[in-house]
Length: 226
Image (tube, rainbow, N blue to C red; front, side, top):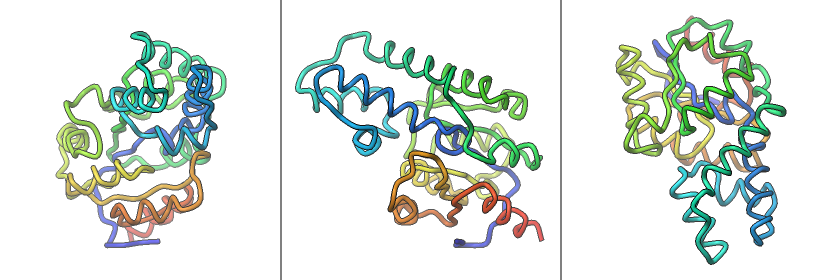
């Protein structure tokens, strides 16, 4: 599915749910922890209520659901539990590594995840060398997605105009951030966390293009180069 013509000099990849099939794992861990605190929730509940939130907003949402404050070390414990699960169970979104290896376009990662989580995930997936330090995190900017700050910083580091960047994103906030940065945005719907209606949510957020797997991304990119 396409919107405006696809022309770009650089690709900015979101990470969780785009390269790493991590959203389902992270939300499974989160559901287990919140359930253990006395509020039984499923993985789907966690995806609906918590996915895509920065840690302060996530803590506020969980505290609201529990009706009480969380322990001071909640964020630290959640991070440790999530990374431990990633070490054993993390996989790439099918086709991500092959696409990255086959396309030498100027590129980077711009993710809402922490530097620690990104570094571990790239190591587990064997993809760190493909980005050579061009990995940008929410830790690097004052305002995360849906604000454009991270994508604008990424374009500057790539020495590319924002209008010449293609963003590949799986979340509404990420799509909104890419649009606010003046970039072309491809909504991506391939991760294990994707549920019915996800495509419509990304289109409603303003995505110019939609791809349901990495083969579709490759086809759109090939068409753009003709």
